[in-house]
Image (cartoon, rainbow, N blue to C red; front, side, top):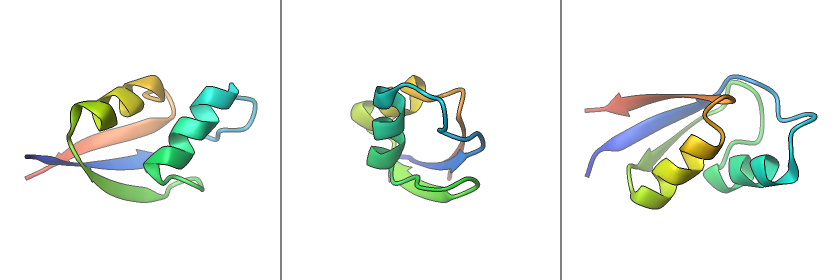
Length: 60
């Protein structure tokens, strides 16, 4: 399975509660923090929920 690198590029201040919880579930606590995850359907769904707050790149 491929891995993805997720970086938080925008703040979660003044965002709906579900988006804040999604960022926390992805392991993103602060701005410019980077986490790596397996590209499972559940992770992809979470990334799509907060796609306007994060940047995603595929790791080969």
